[in-house]
Amino acid sequence: LVPVLVKNEYFGGNVDVTGLLCGCDVARAIRGVSPRDFAVLPRIMFNADGFTLDDMTVDDIRDTAGLPVTVVSCSVPEYLGQIEDLVRG
Image 1 (cartoon, one colour):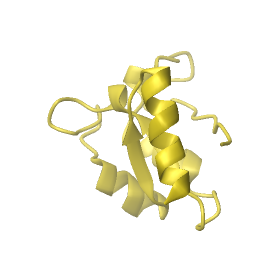
Image 2 (image 1 turned 120 degrees about the horizontal axis):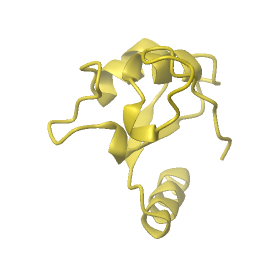
Image 3 (image 1 turned 120 degrees about the vertical axis):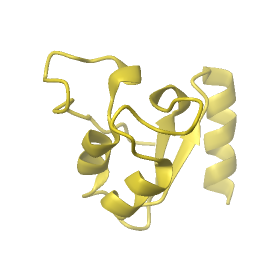
Image 4 (image 1 turned 180 degrees about the horizontal axis):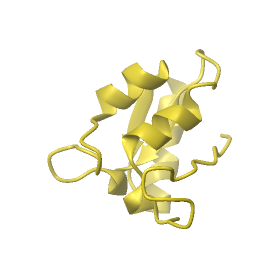
């Protein structure tokens, strides 16, 4: 598990709240990650309809970045289990 820094270009460099990340910034940040890897994103980035603030879906982010993407809980006990399940396959 390797954290990736996502620069918030959409709202400006001074905004550092996870819920204010946009799909375009996330896709740009994870684009260079190895294709055999995957990215996990916190559920808080998406509204109830599954869209980011710039109207991207998980599939849009995946297609733009060229990398599998999965949404996980924001709760530590929940997301650790979810990531373990993903790694196991």
